[in-house]
Length: 428
Image (cartoon, rainbow, N blue to C red; front, side, top):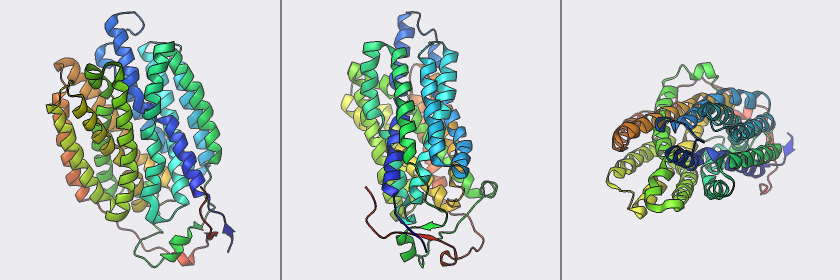
C-alpha cells in the first residue's frame, strides 16, 4: 500500500486563485455602466440600443455554462492543468479582442463567446481536483472555498476597473485585464494536480463503516435518466438566473444614490457572494444539500421582493440587500457541485457537473435579458423582481422533494485498490 503526501490545500488555493481572476464576469455591471454612459452621451463610441446592454453578459453566461460540459470531460480525461491553461488563454483573448472594438457584435464574440468559453474551462478545472484530495465530509467546505474566489473577485476588480476606466478608458482597461488574466491563470494552473487513481483520504478509511456511499459512479447518460438531475437543473436555473439578474445591474441601481462610489455595492455584494459559498458548503455538510437549498431559496425570494420597497436614495438598505442577494446567490455555487458529487459520484464529476451547470447558463441568459427588456419598456424593474421571487418559491418547493437517486449495489471501499495519504498535517 503506497503512501503519498496530501497536497490538497495547495490545490485548493490554486483553484481559489484561478477563480479570483475568472470572477471578472461579476464586474459586468461596472462595464455596462460605462457603455450606457457612452450611449446616453451620444459620443459615437458605443452605438448600441439600451435593450441590448446585457447581451454580451447573457451570452457569456450561456457559453460559460455549456462549455463546462466539454471542459468537464477534458478535465476528467486529460488533466485539470491543461483545462485551466486553455481557460486562461481563451479568457485573455476574449478580453483582448474587445479592447480593439466597441461594436456590439465584437463584444458578443469577444466577451460573450471567447471569454465565456475561457470561464468554462477555467472554472471546470478548479473544483474537481481540490475535492478529490479531501474526505466526503468536507466536500461542501472545500467546494465553497474554491468557488469563493469567483464571487470575491469583484472586491478588487470593481475598484480596479473604475480606476483603469477613468485613467485609460474602457477599451484599454479590457486589454490590461486580458493580458493579466491570461498570464495569472496559466501560471496557477501548474499547481492543479489530481490525486492518483484509487487515492483515499485517511479520514475516509476511518469512517468507511458509516452510512455514506463513497462508491457512487453515474455515467452522464445514466445521470440524465434520473429525476434527481432534472430537479437539480430546474432549481439551479431559477436560483442562478434570479441572482445574476441583480448582480448584472446592481452598479446601475446604486449609481443613482452613490455616484462613482457605486463600485462599493458591487464589492460588498462580492463579499456576500464569496461568504455564501463557504458558509452554505459547511452548513450543507451538516444538514444536507436539499435542506440548505430550501432555506437559501426562501431567503433569496424574500430579499429580492424587498427591493420593491427600496428606493435608490436609501443607500444603506440597498447595500444590505445587495450583500444578502450576493450571499444567497453564492450558496448555489457550492451547493450544486457538492450535490452533484454526492448524488452522482466523482469519477465523471467534471462532465456531470457541466451538465448540471448548464442550468446556470440558461438562467443567466434568460433572466438578465428579460429583466433588461422589462426595464427598457416599463422604466422600472418591479415586475422582474416579482417574477423572480415567485419562481424562487417554486424552486424551494422542488428542493424539498429532491433526493439521491437509487443506485445499484457496488463493491465495498475496502475491496478496492487504494492509495492512502501519509497521515501528516496537510500542506498549507
